[in-house]
Amino acid sequence: MYEFLNIDKFNLDQECIEQAQKYLEYAEEAVETAKVRNEASVRLDELRAQTELRIRNEALGAGVKVTEGIIASRVEVDGDYLVAQLELVQLKANAAKAEAKREAMEQRKSMLEWVCRLYLSEYYSDAVVKGKPGVVNDIAVSAIKEQLKKQ
Image 1 (cartoon, one colour):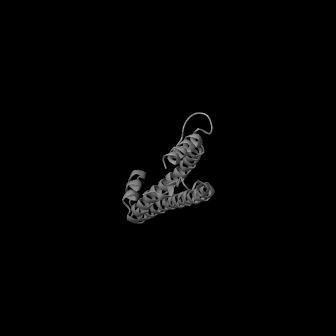
Image 2 (cartoon, helix red, strand yellow):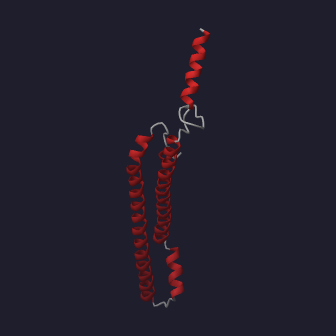
Image 3 (tube, one colour):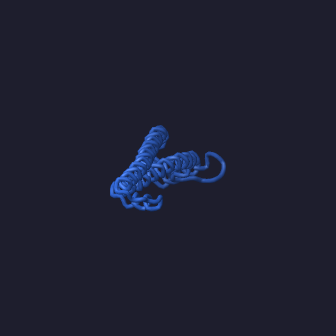
């Protein structure tokens, strides 16, 4: 599902080279979605003010006195205002997802560092013998000599 987080442990050099570029892409996406969300929030505030003004003017034209509570209630049920609110809810969700992806890429960086450390410690090698250096080679040479003696 989130392929962008995968680390190819057999291609670590390329993974390390590409990490900064990948992170930048997701960071820019997070910034852009936050900008779109903030702009929608400003438009919603503007729409609220325009709707309140329209309601006041309509009431004034009809000679009806309205309270702040009545105005607030009418704004909340105004069709355009409801649509704008729902749009803002979706944009907030998009911004939160983009920020989560950016944070995941930051975590990927840490995991990439750890995978590199594991690789350097020969964690992924087939034969690792703890002890003094050269033990693996000595074991391999001994095994080959045994095979040659049998032939």
